Amino acid sequence: MRADAKCSSTKRRKSIKEIIGKIMAFYDLSKQERIHVVAKMSNDILNEIESGKFKNTFSYFSNEDTYIRKSAYLSVGRLYFNNKTLQSKIIQMLDVFLLQDDFKIRQTVINAAGEIGKRDFGTVQHFFDKGLFDTHHSPRNAVIGSVKKMGEVNPEPVLSWSKKYLHHSDKEIRREICHGIELRGRRFPQDILPLLQELQHDTTARVRNTLIHVIGQIAYKKGCLKIVIAHLNNWDNKALVAEALEEIIDVHYRYRNFSAMTQNEARQYIAGNYQPHQDR
Image (cartoon, rainbow, N blue to C red):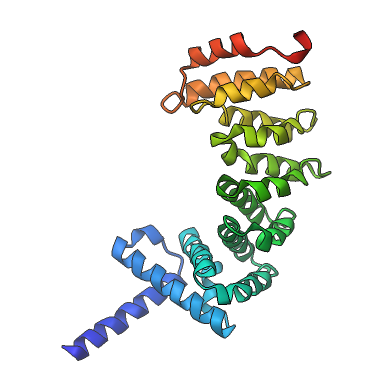
């Protein structure tokens, strides 16, 4: 019995190693297999952080399967907060990995920093300062995603950091910041509207279109339209606001199963409450 069990266990460990080492679909595994794979990954990463040798961790961060990489950066985030004595080593590891040529590794680093930044943004801010200017779009997209998830739960330092880049000379930086702060605005539009207002005169089409999109996205949930319209009343760029109002009305139709108001109710509310300050 024991010999058979040992043999079975050895085969299972080998199977997991093969799974992680190959291009595979993480969600093709059973739930129990996924739990076992993630547990092994987390244990490997912990052991390698302690030893300073990152063979397995490196392979997880660079894996072709996005869900393997996701499991890796989620594990790093958990390990950071569960092992305070290892926090400096974790940051050192991420610093080294950020210098790698493989964009997937740099992308995973940014996402790991995003998990840490939900509670400790100051420690990982430099990853986003660098990631914004990455030569590959995937790490830059990871910055957007991380700003979204961090800003939702840790808004003060994240929005303060975001504000520094609102008028950057690179239009893509401005667009990425605008997009990144969106998620916080879906629940608390008042937190990001002052930042969005600073972009109202941006003449770059991609920035302008993203701004209009974000305004639409933060206006359809309960109580949000009132806040958005009250703020738009004080914006100077009437032409942009007009486009944003059309987007808000359109969003209320596209998201009609989730919107607090019907499209017609939103249209009527705007008609009765949008009174720009120049006309008062």
